[in-house]
Image 1 (spheres, rainbow, N blue to C red):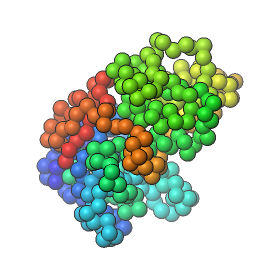
Image 2: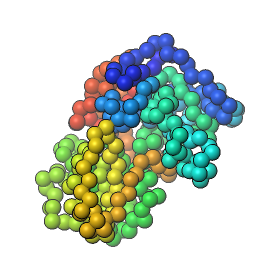
Image 3: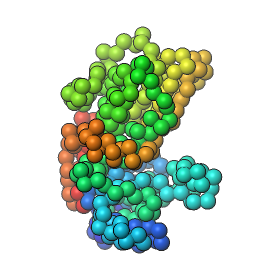
Length: 317
């Protein structure tokens, strides 16, 4: 099969990569579309020291499964695969299993290929109201919804979202329903797109730095943004960190301690509310697509994805 393989130094398209063999309890999935994510780009720079087929945002069709009712179904999949035996797995928290695999990120070939395998329990059927292209956004949208599972937001709260990129666009659309939200970014086009959705979005130099917010979310992708973010949180407020990068970040510990700021790390989230939001048209995603490329044009796709002005690039298998 065709697959985009990363050997730790370079990415290449292989035409004869072995088709994965499913194990008991797994499904073999024919990938239709897969999205290029910021994490994929960070892996190319050294994040997670991953070797293998990249990609974890996908929609596909089940071609083999123990559960025959899944065969022929369109699915998306949760990316973490736990050991099944540890305390976290037994609590349904496979994403914190010390021995976990993660699709296209940690020890498990991913979605930039014609086929992939995942445990059947990781799969979610895609409602017919959601197109293939929209379904690709399920995994990052779930990450946006994770904030709601971690923090009980209040309508009276003032919230600041730092970052207007791929994930920032989705987080903004989720948070807008729960808090008084302001988004800060560096890209006029991306901020304009948010304003067209009715979201208050401003350039970084327009922010009144004397203001303090009940909750600040960092989705900048900049490991040192936390240095500025803590200065914008009210005493005893919340700082939600969404940035993952190969670079190490500096931590302003004194300000965090003195102001008793509560820091929340936040990553993978629940698929069901994400799929429901797409189905009910609560979240818009089509406007974010800056290109759909066949896997054979992967070099053009990644070049486009690496541009700071680009939002979402999707590969067609």
